[in-house]
Length: 129
Image (cartoon, rainbow, N blue to C red):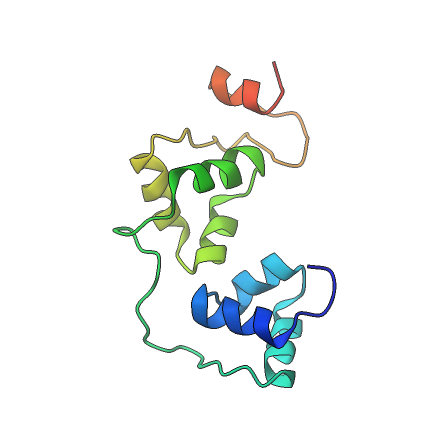
């Protein structure tokens, strides 16, 4: 989203998608402070550090095709994916192992610099072959 988010958008992100301000900032292309200000300005009910049940956990992962798209096509890091769903990087790694998604090694760089990819299928998807 490029414009200022509406009350309905913010409410949906907080209460339906259970997103944190950090995850909202990634999706909206804003800083965390701007998201918090928008929540306050639009008077969206938001409880910090609430003990609500998390939507996504190690036992309840996101869908395989969605995870593959974010990691292999959009080249998001495990940390960025975890921030979007309110879980840690290790939880994303467990999901990826569950779905047999090849994890990029430390030499893999998503910013277009020279890097090494050991998996030919991943290299083909990235357009390197």
